[in-house]
Amino acid sequence: MDHMLEGLLRNNVVEMQYFKLGFFPTRALLTLNPDFIEEKGALSNVEVDAFVSGYDVLRKKVVTLNNQEEVLSTNVFNPDAISPMNLYAKDFCADKKMVNDAIADFQSKRLTNVSSVGDVFKLSLKSKAILVDLFMATGNSIKNPDVINEHLEDIYYADPTIRGMTQIRYGFFFAMDYEWESDRQALAFAAKKWLSLIDVYRELFSQSCSERTRKNIENIKYPEIDQFDTYEKIIDYWPYAISPRPPEMLESDLVAVYETAESID
Image 1 (cartoon, rainbow, N blue to C red):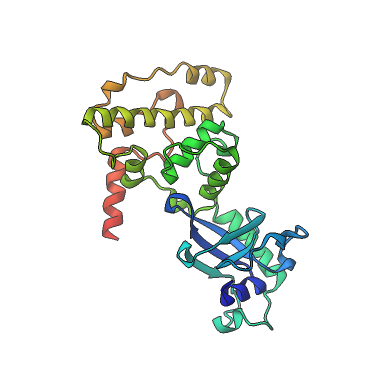
Image 2: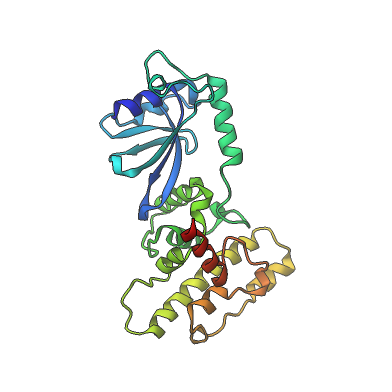
């Protein structure tokens, strides 16, 4: 294991952002210090030969990364402004109460739900797989329930700003990079994918709505696929029964504005 990271993990809790499936960046709060871990024997699965391996206090399991290229960034809890060289020294250890307070602060202020409505972890397996496809561009190829739940967890623990809808994310979801035989075929595929995503939100809205609203959701009738003759029409379609449209599902004009702002920054 990288000796510097190992020292940091033994002395502290380290926020690490790293790539997962589809180069999707997620986060973990890693440590090798048993004083910061509630579960006994939690470090037994640590892989000492990996680039970095430690117990994630968020997921409550060991996270292992084998390559340096998987790591995007590290952030060490250091409220006392201790010299970076001393943070991984053997004679230093972060204060347990301060670390626990930092963990609680991270969980309460820096984590947000994947969806603005409902609980994605209570969705059907099919709907979970669609969300994983949206964020990680899997093409609904994953069928194993444990793997799907693991990836959904990665999406939840990611920086919320990473989950924003962009032209690139919509593009991968619609397979716009695929060499379709015709524009009509491409649009039909994209429309079906979009309607499958709306089905996910129908399920999310139904988790906590009135019986009347639930019936209205069940009675939603989609337009014919051939009516979606542009990508803008696909993205802008949203059934009234599950209104208001969730803010994370940007309309086509807002996606364009977001992309413009990003390029200016």
